[in-house]
Amino acid sequence: MIDSHAHLFDEQFSGDLAEVIFRAKSGGIEKIIIPATNIETSKKAIKLNQNYDFIFPAVGIHPHEVANVNDDDLKIISELADNKNVIAIGEIGLDYFYDFAPKEKQIEIFKKQIDIAVTKNLPIIIHTRDSMNEAISIVEEKIKQFPNWREKGKRGVFHCFGGSTDEANKIFSLGFLISITGMVTFKNTPVIETLKNIGIKNIMLETDSPYLAPVPHRGKRNEPIYIFETAKKICEICNCSLEELRETTNLNCEKLFGKQ
Image 1 (cartoon, rainbow, N blue to C red):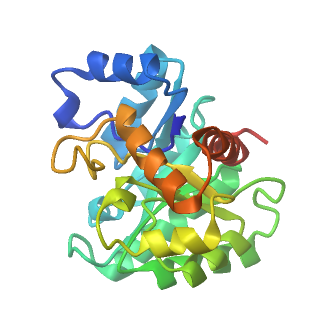
Image 2 (image 1 turned 135 degrees about the horizontal axis):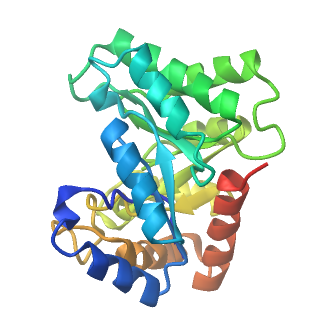
């Protein structure tokens, strides 16, 4: 399995990161993607890649962090994206649930980071909360502006997806994937019904470690090895084998994050 989204630079891993990574690798995790949340964590993600060749960094600024971001900061992100092992710009997007940054600022920085991705021909990793429709609209606008942006591959992923079938299908039509977290193991989560409708064709798996640990680890620190609990639940919902899910989601990761 590939864990397409894990924040292994988080302080919750400061005491035992090597053990967490060992458990993942020895337990069957082939690759781990590390999306950043700001300049500092972008550099940390790149450092992890230097230490572990199966860990791949993305660089970017999370919407929670954009209140005081300026063009100089974005220039640093752009320069970090020139590292040959950086595979995406992310985690970027819009979060209207929390009030950490004005909406107008979030939109501005989201658009500018998409522009960086276009310039580097990299995919993007999108965070949304209470902002799905606006994020989709911005992406659609950027594709019209830059129709050749990754036209031969996938353009990005809406991570930690919990939306409707209609939203998922719109995302797919734009050349994007969705990724599924341990939330799928929670009772009454709407993503279960969505998965029944869309199947596994356009999904990836993620832990969003250290957050959103799946049942039976819910409420504890999440880590990449727990992705198998999420996978088992998806197999149950979609009536597929673990091997079929592994092949499909790993191929989707390669289509998204592979260099063009």
